[in-house]
Image 1 (cartoon, rainbow, N blue to C red):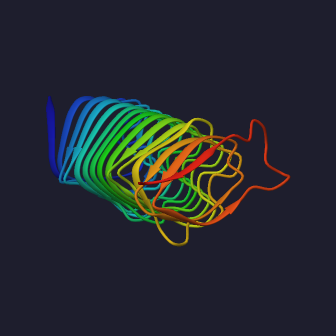
Image 2 (image 1 turned 180 degrees about the vertical axis):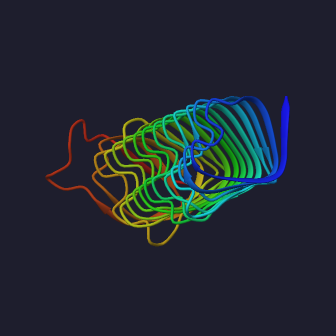
Image 3 (image 1 turned 180 degrees about the horizontal axis):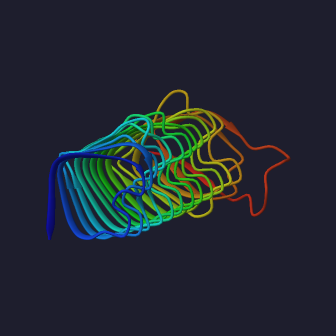
Length: 281
């Protein structure tokens, strides 16, 4: 592997089509596509300032690096990335990628990030300003995670999340096969139009959660006082270890809770209209 250390590049495509290359203490200044069409790349203690540095790359390690705001859309159309101990300050990262592993990564401006990606692993990752995070992505595993940003995980499939704190309006819309363990999810309109959403040992906050959900499962969850008008037109199996502020027209299934503040079953309920509402004894 060729080693390049303690140097700077800028302009258009300075390292285009490089292979088997290690960059250490290298700065990529303003310009475009510094490492386009590359393979087997290592970047250690590097600083990226220019746009689109890693496009169409197959096999790369990024460790102890910084992507400044100018390095927007840095990682697209690539495969087999491992990123460790890195800060990403630019938006619109990780698009159309297969094979992403992020460990101890901070993304403070994660707008429109992780779109159309598959085979993704995140551990000890924090994201903020993360509107529309993970749009249309699949096969995702997340552990020890903090997120602030709305409309997250829309249209995602095959997702497992553990030990997360997620602050997101409209999270998990139109998802399929998502399981969340031991986490806090805050934000209105959670999980609408989802299929096979499973929440285990989770705390849920926000108005009108879990409506229009298909085959929703909740196990040993807690619902905050602002969780009103829940489960409208959903099929649900839920065990809730708290009161539920209000339930409105669940379509079918069974819900067990400590108590119910209000139960709304009106002429607009949809068939089969046979959801059972129980209390713990």
